Image 1 (cartoon, helix red, strand yellow):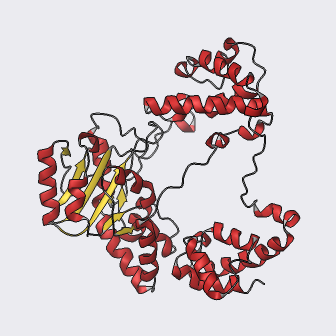
Image 2 (cartoon, helix red, strand yellow):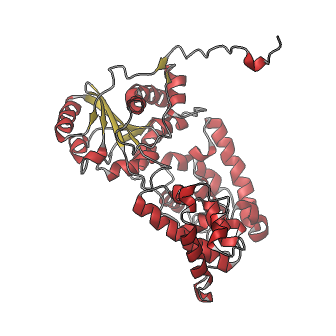
Image 3 (spheres, helix red, strand yellow):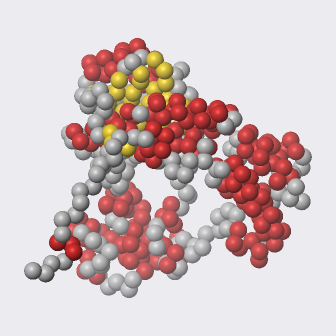
Length: 410
């Protein structure tokens, strides 16, 4: 009897020999009461060494970026899973430990939501950035644990809706694993940083992260709509702007991710297509599901109001931001800047290659673009160049590598 190859039994995948699927001390209870929190605080204070911490948000599901679960671990104390929505603040945990070092992985992903619940580390170690400074090819937590400790994590719920209550036990298990080995990983990476004389680099980076803040949203955030570049007519842009505002207000009130309220594609379609009625809006393929289609009448009304706006209230098709244009446009608009860019960029790339780190770890591209576009202010003297770079958050270890190259451009 004939059969397809797909009908044959496939060999079962063999799990990694060192696959970690459960916390070594068992899954801790979720902390949801003041009594449980007080016990956790006393145990954390009685522990020793730095504190590993992580947070889970509901990105893609909620408008806010708040933490819906906080995981904490310390040697001699164990792991604690805390529901921050059950408390006014987690400051009672942070205060007795504020002088300690806090270990995070990819700190910029979690610092804002941790600060929101009252945890604001004054000293930290970022295992992801340590990996970058060491030139590791992959710096995700799972990748670093695999390369440095030969341990694989069972990772299954990274995209879960962490606002779900009750939180399923498999999700809690996944979350506990995120801090299970952070302390050991930190020790390994710090040793490597010291062996390669890069610990002072890391200290400067971690000090910068302590004061790091997310970038402010752009003045006209609606211009970031996916596909808005296809809309050029000012009146159509007004429709897109008003629909974006309506969506953002609804998403914020309902604490729902904007894409779940209305996809960008639907806003762009309503703005630029020749629609004749709310029925035409309802029939758009970009309104993918019933919950989106229920907004068709409101979108039509907003469209009609935007079409009736006086000319002086319409957005300009291309807003002059005053920002430096992309380097690919420099040859025509600023030939001297283009020449500097073509000289500086490969020199910096050569240093990064020699150090075995990514160019963006050596220095962020933005201050280099600013310098090449208009170097006069920065090049008044060597001291002013250093201060100019510091004002742009370039760390001292980076300045020592890049300032000779910048100083030699003219």
